[in-house]
Image (cartoon, rainbow, N blue to C red; front, side, top):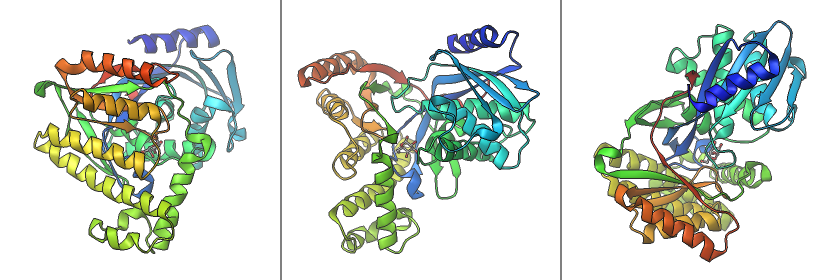
Length: 389
Ligand code: GLA
C-alpha cells in the first residue's frame, strides 16, 4: 500500500476502532488541453495522475455519515437525510454530496464511517475534490453492490453523480471533466472526452520514449473556484450562446466564428466565445499531434491555449504567466496554465535534460517577480482510474 493508503487505514482504526471494510481510491488529474470547454459541451484531454485520494470505509446500520481526514482535526457527522445544498460545511460536502446524489438517483446507500488520506495537492488545480468524490463513489458502488466500476458505462454514471455532488451540494458550478478524468481514465493514455455526449476514447500518452517530460508546476498561488469568477465565465458563455441562438458554444462551427462574433453584444462575450471555439479546435489538433507523435506541434498548441486563456478568457494569474514565459524562454516545447485558473498549476512540455535548469529558472523568476508563493514541481505520468485500492 502507498503511504496515503496506509494513513487512511491507520486513521480509520484510530478514530472508529476496528478495521475498515475496504479501501478505495481515485486520482487527481492534469488537463493537457481543452480548458473551460467542458461546460460548453466541448472537448477535453486530461490525464489521471499517480497522486490519489484514499477512503477507508465501513458501512453503518443507521443513516449516519461520519467523516475524518488526515489533513483535518476532528470529525464531521451528518444524518443522510440532512445533506442539502451547502450542508455539511467545508470538505465534508464532497463525500456527503456523493451519498446524496446516489440516493437521489434511486440507489439504496448505507450510512458510512469514512477516513480519508490523500497525496493530491489541495488547491493546486489538480482536482483534489474530484479525487475525493471518486474515492467515496467507488466505495459506495462496491459496498451497495451497484457494480458501477465494472465497465465504462457504469463509470460514466458514477462520474456524473460525483459532478452532481459538486454542483448541487458543494455548490461549485463546474463541468464534468475532473470527475471523468478521475474515474474513466486509462494508465498510459490521455482521456479524450466529448462533453456533449459523454463519449470517450483513450489516446496513448507516454513521453519517456521521446525523451520528454510533462512538468507540473504548482504556483502555490490561491486557487478558488468559489469566488465567483468561474461562475461568471460560465454565465458569459451561456449568454453568448443564447445571443447566437445556440444551445451551447460547441454548436458554433469554427468556420463561422468571425461572422458570429459580429452578432455578439459585448467585446467580453466575443473574447469568451473566441476562446471556447478555438480551444475546442486545439483539442482536436492536439489529439492528431499525439497520434503522429508530433510533440513540437503539441507544445505549440499548449502555448496557444495559454495565450487564449490569458488574453481572451482572462483566467490566468501573474504566477502562471511567469511559469509559461520562463519555460518558453528556457527552451520548453510549450507551456500553459491547467485547470480553472486564477492560480493553481501550469504544465510545461520539455526535453528531460532541460528539467533541472528550467526548475531553477522558474524558481528564480518567482523571486525576481516578487511573487509571494514558491513554486513546487513534479513530473506527471498518465495513471489509472479510481477503484478498490
Ligand atoms: C475546473 C472545473 C472543470 C473545468 C476546468 C476548466 O477544473 O472543475 O470542470 O471547467 O476548471 O477547464
